[in-house]
Length: 316
Image (cartoon, rainbow, N blue to C red; front, side, top):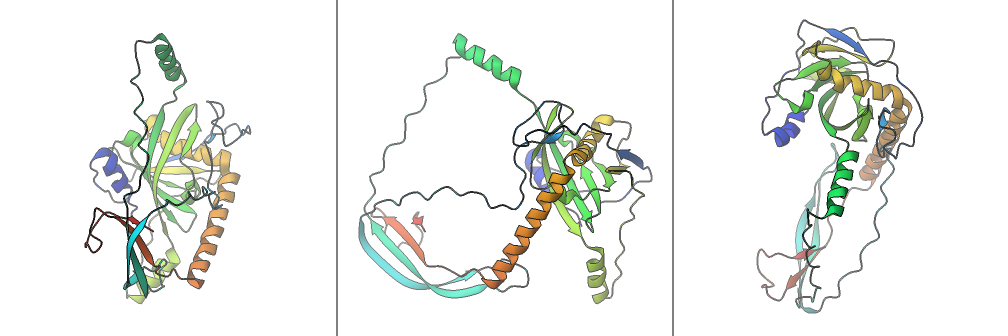
């Protein structure tokens, strides 16, 4: 299974040629070195030399929603209502979509008297000494962020085939097998390693060998699992199967992620368990309470025809 990281890369790099997951004959083993496990507040950036996740790590806890805004006071001139049939798509595989007759209500309203937007800010005088000093301070404190493009296919939650592109260079693809479940690297974006700040952009997919074999046998086919090289057993590590092993800068992506795993392993596993628990509970809720089509209400300005087939409206 190939993950759609090339789609993400194409946005940034305009184009990418998707590559297969074949293994070249050359293999280079890599294991992340021992690192400091000094504890710091994960919500803060921490020391520039720390290896840690920056910001929050998603653990399945629902986000705190902002309080709803008070509704606009609208003067209704005329109201039309009619039944329509809507279909709510199935939220999960194995479920059916729900078709239902609901009510479409259109309100013709007086154009609301909305406040004028605030005026634009005055232009910044770049010759002002205070502005120059502020810009210099910002440059001194700025920490460059390196974007990490990774495609990961996880096999049975124990081995991961990883493809990455150093510095986003799609013509210099690197490939390796890792003994880390890269599902654990979901739930966050930014991290630091060796005084550098990284932002992880990862496409990920999962393969279940037993399930693949079952479906293949149902179709009279044979599932051939990938050939996975012998991986390190003394800690998080990887075996390079494509790319220049003599270029340490190109290996920084995987070396840094494995060192991050060594430092943050407990938090990563706890957060993943929380996300899985939330996912299972959400799926159970959706199966017990399939989403239903709801009534639709629109407010249409008096400048538009109430029966117009297509108008810009405020819809609830």
